[in-house]
Figure 1 (cartoon, rainbow, N blue to C red):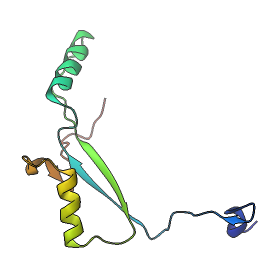
Figure 2 (figure 1 turned 135 degrees about the vertical axis):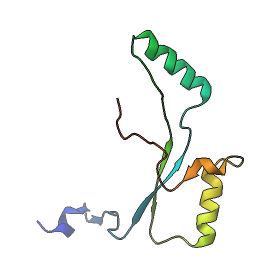
Figure 3 (figure 1 turned 120 degrees about the horizontal axis):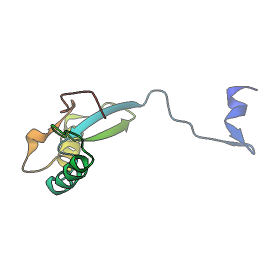
Length: 101
């Protein structure tokens, strides 16, 4: 069976993601509110686990068909970042320790 036949169902061509699409990531911290972090820390300590710190972030996975213009990048940044804390938004992760428990 050819790839074209595999992608066809009942004679209708199915759309498949284009191989040329680009995926990039943008990050915003924190990923959890201080209140939720406080609750999480209490629950972890109640389990008898010696907790040092919890770092969280939100990762936005963005797929585009072509490289964004400067204006499009500015608009996307404005939409996804916090207005009053632009230093908490980046194209690289804020997490300092890659270990996850």
